[in-house]
Length: 195
Ligand SMILES: CC(C)(COP(=O)(O)OP(=O)(O)OC[C@H]1O[C@@H](n2cnc3c(N)ncnc32)[C@H](O)[C@@H]1OP(=O)(O)O)[C@@H](O)C(=O)NCCC(=O)NCCS
Image (cartoon, rainbow, N blue to C red; front, side, top):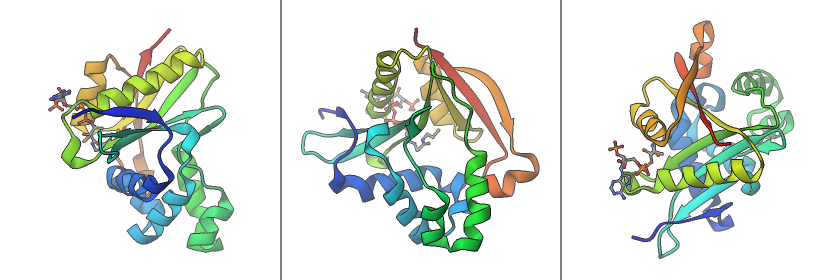
């Protein structure tokens, strides 16, 4: 199978990308984004082409996607009003506050990987590695010196992929009392020098 990675994703694939995103991060995002129906609506409308890469096979079938975040923006955006439009103005207050807690401080030389996911049937074929190649290439093109990411403790497969790629642990984030809202107890921060 030929795997092609391109910047962005086809508009026709927006709902599929949102579905894979939700499937990958449901554990982390369910407390803030609620039921799948609302979460998928919020994610589909907030995904940005200009901070994404997608992988397709030779028939144009979506295999997976990865997102990036820089000081200019990120893969999934959502203002208070976007959240309020789906969840109502009152719960949008705390939902925005929880989503804000996932934000990391970025400098101009750091590119954060803002999510990577591959359709279940296409895993183990090198799609994730190719998406990582595109993320790292973009970091170099933007004169960034480091790519960073977060991975939750239980996700040993993703962590193995990152380690094999050369990412090293740089710290740990404990959610503590916020764990029920943040959807994870502990996450590892990893970084790869790309200069
Ligand atoms: C983590 C994830 C993105 C990895 O994607 P992937 O496409 O399976 O990654 P790769 O194929 O590049 O590498 C993973 C495995 O395939 C193997 N592999 C890589 N290229 C291969 C090839 N050409 N042929 C066969 N196997 C290959 C790797 O050795 C690796 O093996 P292992 O995981 O069994 O140890 C994917 O498992 C996923 O979407 N998981 C759910 C979402 C998620 O957890 N995202 C990360 C959040 S931090």
